[in-house]
Image (tube, rainbow, N blue to C red; front, side):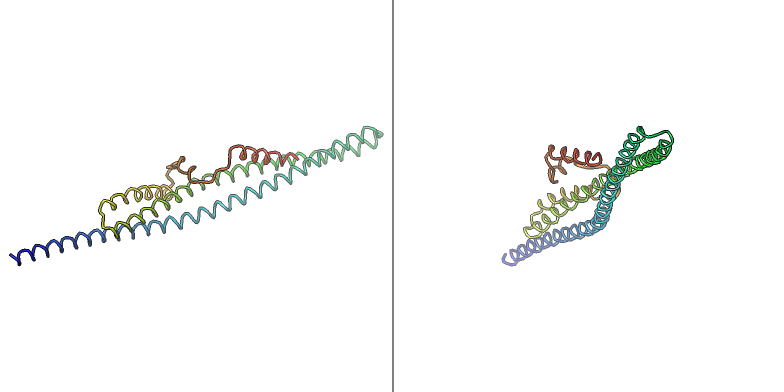
Length: 220
């Protein structure tokens, strides 16, 4: 009887050890796969961040040129008005010279206006590029957050040997994989509500005031 009890205890111990080993192996494989996938997403996300910085720099540069063109146009228009007023009190012979100068400055103002429109289109294109890149950057940020949570849950699973924790960790793992693949493959999957909750948003009034100030600067 003692021998049978010892064999039964040994079998239970072996079974328990085997279950622990299987669970630890599953956790190790899951963590390894997640770490590899996070590394791939990190490389892609870094490239996107660099492209966002370049798009923002291009937008600021084009806005600066827009303001400079606008100032030159306003100066040219003011000069045209001044020359027209001066020409009104001059003799016909002198007015001919004024007319040439007026035509020159008017052509210069028209040319600057055309360049302004081109720059405005460039600014709008830069903003669209930035928004598109930011869309995918949010996807990678959510993937990183959820996969990091999954790794933490897998670590707790390995320590506590609770099999139900392993299945709970599968939930953020799945979400992280979906968001990571969305960023890598260009899927239009974007949880806007969650992104707004996690992002730093300015009050609507402050945003409107900033937009108004940007629009008013070129008109100076």
